[in-house]
Every structure is written in C-alpha cells, then in structure tokens.
Amino acid sequence: MTDDGIKIQSGSLRRAASDLHRAGESLDKEWKSFQAQAKDLKYGSTDMVGSLIGASYEAVISWAHTSYDSAVKAFVSFGKAVDVMAARYDGAENAGVAAAKRVGEDL
Image 1 (tube, helix red, strand yellow):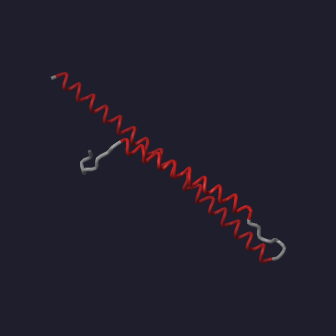
Image 2 (cartoon, rainbow, N blue to C red):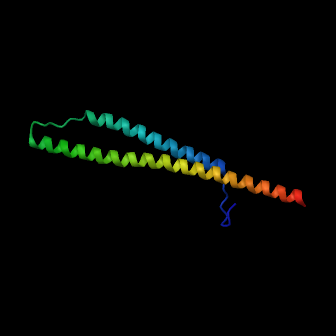
Image 3 (cartoon, one colour):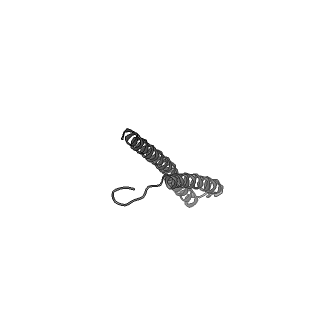
C-alpha cells in the first residue's frame, strides 16, 4: 500500500495491461476492416464535383488512418508500460520481503 492509501495489486495491473493491449488490437482490426470497406467507395472522376469529393474523402481517410494508427500504438504502449509497472512492483515487493527475512534472521 502506498502512503496515500492506494493498494497496488500486480495481478490487477497485469489484467489492465492485457486489456489495454487487447483494446489496441481490437481497434486495429476494426480500423483495417473499415479501411477495406472505405476503399470500395468510389467517387466519380468524370466531373469536377466528383473529383473534389473523392480528393476530400481520400484526405479524410488518410487523416483518420494517422489518428487510428496513433491510438493503436498508444494502447499497446500503455499496456506494455503497465505490465512493466507490475513487474517492477513485484520485484520491489520481493526484495522488501527478502530484506525483512534477512533482518529477522540476523536478530
């Protein structure tokens, strides 16, 4: 437990890390599915209006790709960071227990 009363449980951190990773994978899968559908939408290039709509549409899809790709990477990265946090907490906890045992043995 920390000084401000927050109880840290590495198992909960690991589950959260896994959930974040799965959220990133799910978002990536859904985005790729949407992209495939979006590519099927065709705007006519036979007139000026169709050409403008098509160019605008492609620009929006490109911007959305950048945004979704960034979000996917962030979810996965946050998941890895939370998993590292859990491992470090376990390491510190185990080191503290081992040190207490050594002190107890010396008494």
